Amino acid sequence: MASSTGQFLSRTDHKKQRELDEARKAGTLPAELDEEGREINPHIPEFMAKAPWYLNQAAPGLKHQKNSRPAEQTAGLDQWYVRGQKAGPTATKFRKGACPNCGALTHALQDCLDRPRVKGAKWTNADIRPDEHLARDLKLKYDGKRDRFAGFDLGQHEALVAVKFKAEEEARRAHVHTQKLAELDAADAANAADGGGDARAREEQDDDGLRVREDEEVVAAREGGGTRQGAHKMSVRNLRIREDTAKYLLNLDTNSAYYDPKTRAMRDNPRPDQPMGTADDADAGGAFVGDNFVRHRGQTLELFELQQFTSAAYEKGQELHLNAEPTQVEMMNKLFREKKAALAASKQTAVLDKYGGEKHLQPVDPRLLLAQSENYTEYDRSGRMRDREGGAAAEAKVVRSRYAEDVLHANHTAVWGSFFDRATLRWGYADDGSTLKHSYSTGEAGRRAREIAAKTVAAGMGGPTRAEILASERAGADDGAPAADDEAAARAARAERAARVPTRTLYGIGEGLASAELDGARLQAALARERERQELADGGGGGAGTGGGGAQGGTKRGYNSMAADSVTAEDMEAYYMRKRRADDPMAQMADTVGDA
Image (tube, rainbow, N blue to C red; front, side, top):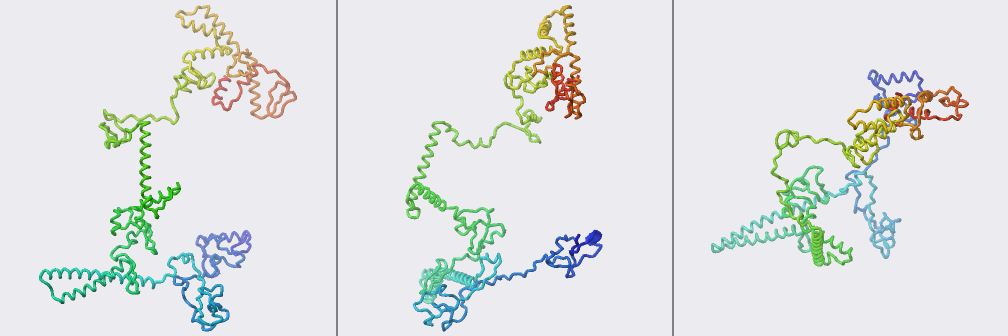
């Protein structure tokens, strides 16, 4: 056995080491220290605290679990590739190893992006291009490689904001001067009604009108996208009004509609739980319902339908083009829809003329849709409907099984399994006593015929014969009592039959022994031999006898055990009476009856 330090320990040392570890885990002894003097948690498994052999670590610890490689230096947020910057001042003389075409030292002739010269800078020493700035390879992390705003110039954004504020200020000033101009027009109208005004007021009005026209040009530049003054073009982006709420502030839930800050787009509705209103409200600058709102309203759906119609017509061989011939496509689509509606109506009319049922297409009375009636019903606390008289809850329905019950077939008045024949140990029908399933019912006559047949078969078992059965039935049908000599003859016949051993109708039928006469003494001896043979077979012992007729058990047999021997009717009857039938559910009952 080896310890945590890698040294081999004997059984005694290993036992001491285990007791020491248990004491450290219990807190009775101080924890073990590593190479740096820090305590080691005693509950850390040995395979984690023990260092591999190739690290040559003497004491256990977790130093080998740490990443010993230095951290890789990656680019920060303020570092990006420099664009458009030159390496230094332009050279005045061609340098060896520079590009023969432009004279730059940072690329070769085949990589030169300057136009090909008739005589390059190598021979003319004129118009030498400056060296390009060779950007160093930035080591970016996963987020840095996918940063959409990497290298974004904040100065450009500040310039855009300044232009926006300037446009808003000019628009506000134009609005103020427009109001002043309206006030001056109202004052001029009032002076003209009074008989004229002074010249100074008219001069002030002209100056104000000139300033208002200048402000109107600024407003037109803001709304129209730009105005040209000489060679200068002023462009102002149509931004939202500062008083309006930003679309990304309408719903501050993080799982709401996504806002793309780069394109300033929010396609989904930020407030889907509120009513959207009408399309006119959204166009007028009302509630914001998402940028995709215009795709599902107005003539957008009509245009989409025309595009589908054009595609379907082109597949059928029609040369239609929505952009080239929009009027033709519109008329063709109108004719197609009319013909389609007429065809559907003709099909419906043909079906109704052939099969009828037009009354079912009529609209149903709304009063019938609610299934209301004047019948008064009451329900108890359990939800069951009460009867009309009062009060007592309706009887619970009888719960039936999942299988079909009380199914009568083949003219039977009782189901299969309603009768059990103890003589043959079989199920049957109770109406006619038949034990054959799916047999045709013969009624009471069939029952009497089966009883007579069973009694006739049982004649060999000591029962009356068929003639005696019929005679007794005829005698029972008569009102008078039987004669004395007939009773004496019947008693003598029954005593003679009792002296004989009955044959079993359940056994021996396959061998034709149903009508064989059996001797009682021989049958008892055969039953004893069969019982002994079965007991020996159950015990597994070998037979002791050597005679041919002796019962042999086990695997060892006598010398003459296989000698030919005749089988009598008593032997076959004893064999069938003692035969084991494991698959018969009434086997135990049959054995008990047979032994009795």
